[in-house]
Image (tube, rainbow, N blue to C red):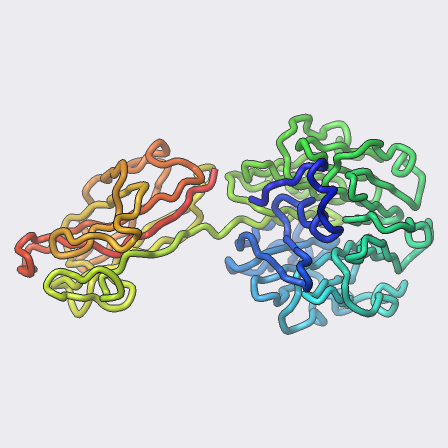
Length: 474
């Protein structure tokens, strides 16, 4: 998770860096003499709620997404390479006209149009152009953040000024504030919002439902969000304030705990991300947009559509391999090297055994698995688990292979390989591992020890795979 910068520390930061710290789990942009996207975490998109136009069921697969946004009937996401994916209702080409290529660092979605921010700070808009959302988009580079309302658009320049265009029936465009101390913008249907560098906010446009007159005073806010009839703000201490029309209890049921790191608004429901990576939603639930909210942790970003669907980005936390017996590190006994990425060679074939991880390593939502392959068939083995990596991750010679992990080493129950020489370890929250066997946030290293009695290299009759390291999320 991105560490939140408190308002008292933000005064020394430039406008763009202030904006970056306003989102604990969203896309991070830092202006350091040029635009540099900093992808903190990648993940997969989970979707739920109303699905009439495929805005849920057509959500793309993959684990390399870094940001997702929701329009009324469609979704758009940014991949780690800066390319875009769009799905759902293709009104006015909002899906089919999605730009190709890379270089995007943020996307937002309105009603039938989408807008993307590129790495050079330029803005691209596509889809419906009824009110000049596309044709009146500002030219040039240097923009820091963008926001889309129902039919109008907002942007913050890196100099801290606000630009607005599109539908202006309620002054949501023409009422844009002057000045150069703004770090974030947000937009509803007929109102607009801007956050200043001191954490205070201003709302303009329609004055009905108290959207303008009831705007919270004071400083210390780090994120703002708006929808058709209500608005929301997140304070630096983690508490949420909601005001406007109290449809479906979206105002009255706002959680009171000071434990949240990001907010997102739907038509009549709200979605928030806790600092522990879990989700909380409330309000209207006729399409399951509240009751079907995913459980577990590991979430890093949230987005809600203008009607009744939501998206959440769950981190891709599978870990990585280290300590190989392929000759790239400590020599294997008898020079019995495996192939690249394997452990030391064994009698199962031409090479050694491998250990790979998949799924999400999160204590609150564990789908993590360890897969063994290339070991001798129908032989016993077990997972070694330890906090430390031996010899700086290179391992030491033990038996016919390299032992890679140590430090409070634990051993799982014995598990035999299949005749093909593979086996799968699952259920890391239960037996044989147990949640108390590792701590959230600390690297945990795994390795598979297995019997290979016909290998006479050292006469020990056992060997090891490579090792796998992962830091478990809460």
